[in-house]
Length: 218
Image 1 (cartoon, helix red, strand yellow):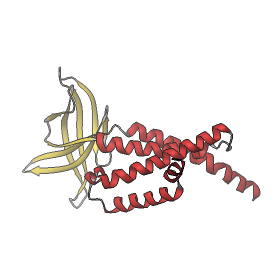
Image 2 (tube, one colour; image 1 turned 45 degrees about the horizontal axis):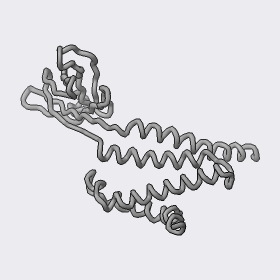
Image 3 (cartoon, helix red, strand yellow; image 1 turned 135 degrees about the horizontal axis):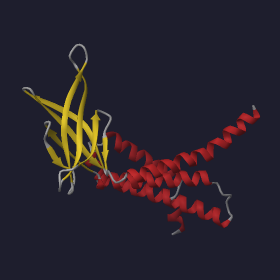
Image 4 (cartoon, one colour; image 1 turned 90 degrees about the vertical axis):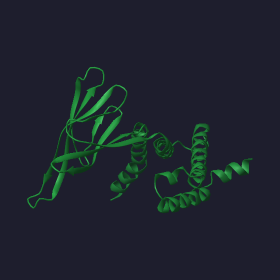
C-alpha cells in the first residue's frame, strides 16, 4: 500500500500525466472531448497525485519533519482549485444564444427578461463594420419594471447577476438589424478567482524573497 501511495504521488507520474493531458488537449475536438474518459481518467490521476503530494507536504510540515514553506503549499492548493473550477465549468456551465431586433425581449431566468432597446453598427470611413453595439435592459417579468440598463460591445460583455451577456454576432434583413446575444452562466468563476489569489500569493512568497536576496548580493 505504501509503495502504491508513493507511486501515485511521484514526480515522474505527475510529469507523464501532464504530458498526456497536454497532448490530448492539443488535439481535442471541441468542448465535448473533455468529457471523455480519455481525458477524465488521466486528469483524475493527476488530481490524486497532486492531492497526495499536498497532503504529504502539509503533514510533514505539521509534524516537524519539514520546515514550513507556505508558498508551495498555496500553489498546490491553487492548482487543485483550478482543476475543480474546470470540472465545475465543464459540467455546470450554461449558455444560450438568440437573435433579437430592437424592441424584442427574451427570458433570462424565471423572473427577468433581457430587452434589446437599440442596436447599431458603427463603421469606419470606408463603410466596413467597426463595432456592434447593443443597448439592453433588464426587465422584471412580473411587472415589466426596468431594473438595469447596459451597453454591450464585442469583448465588452454586460453582467446581470450570475449571467454575462456577450455581443456575439449581428444580421441584417433589408433595413432591419438583428443583434446576436450570447448569455453565459458559469458557476466556476468564484473558484477561479480564489485559485488566482492563492497562486499569486504563493508565487510571491516563493520568488520575492529570492529576488530580494539577489538584489542584496548585487
